[in-house]
Length: 382
Length: 156
Image 1: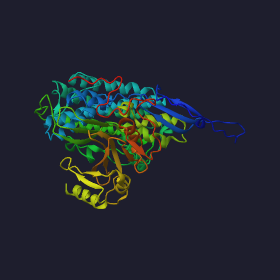
Image 2: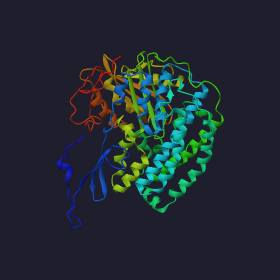
Image 3: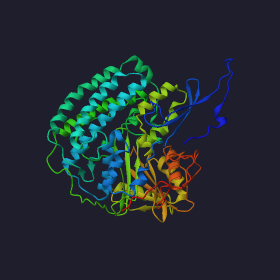
Image 4: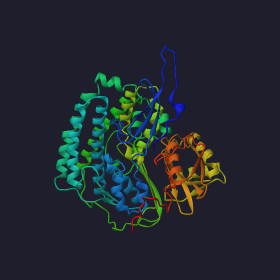
């Protein structure tokens, strides 16, 4: 990881203004408050302007895929939690969906509704963390406090259900691990009613703020063709103008039962990516409201033997997690342990595309763009 | 779905002798492509008007025991089609052509399969290790039967 800096990269002098200037290399990370995790960006700078950006990743590589080759399906679910800790319900789901598709298992209706509620609440929680840290990166300290306050209410709901605040280990192959506790429906309805108007309050802090607009409008424009070429997904792709959401375009679970919209941006700048996520929070709250009101009675898990052995086969499943498309490729050889598990995270591609759009911008813009991508390192490094 | 199998038939017709259909799961279109035809195949997938495969979601290496596989999962945001493309490689001296100029998403994916599986990717602009340290000397770790200094196999 620690690379020798080559001398031919170091110096390029220009004397056009009468002063001798040099390009220099600045190491941003791996410990840095704005890199949202352990990402090292090797920047070649000309004053404040970024000439080149080389991401170095792998600081958080925990070999989840190698470890999974020697674990049963139930033992892998906590590992998938740590694949993307802010949306770990979605990580659990994408893996369990693979196991269910390979074994052609029917999941009960109540379990599907519970999964949707959990993943959408998790999406709101993840976007709240993003909004708070996005404001912090730009110098706005206030949103962080309010966003984390609301997120505590979601954490309470999760703690009621599965005992955990962050790494849930809740969704299982065939359903969920336990039923919703008594009092969950009431508390969840209260939360949705309380949360919906608060998104307007968050918008009042940032959306039309002149400083915010100067920092984000027309900064870091990502054209749609480049985005598709790099397999960018989620709010980043929607911010660039393409209305592509796997919940509607490659449906899974019970999303077809709910009525929601897909917010899209126009230009693909940082402001568009911000407004897409703000509107997604509203749509997720709407989905949770519909799901909790229509929650059917029934089983919370299909009958699955503790020693779950899917037949030989393979499957690539993908779902719309908070950051984008999350995929799981499972190759099963008929035993209780998969021979290959490959996890695909959206942040991998987002950091890949970052050098393309920061050239020529200032380092403060790089911070804003990185924050608007909402990339976190566990997805990249696994 | 019939349109998926029509698509697979048209791909086989376009690359005679290099592409065969695979039966991986019902309603899942999958093909096996010869390693020498990889670049032409993906160029065809991207540029053909009817196919319009513009989104390469994932590239994985798989150690299937007797051979290595490189598995591409590719999708179309225009036609909503899905395709799994497999390339089989020998375990010794595995080589594959890079397609990172056709699909930029494979840039880091190919770096990863090189360091984790030992599959050489030809004509890739930047083959530095991605996830493993620069001074890694314990061989490709994702191969079956790999053991390293700190790797403990969980007992049954």
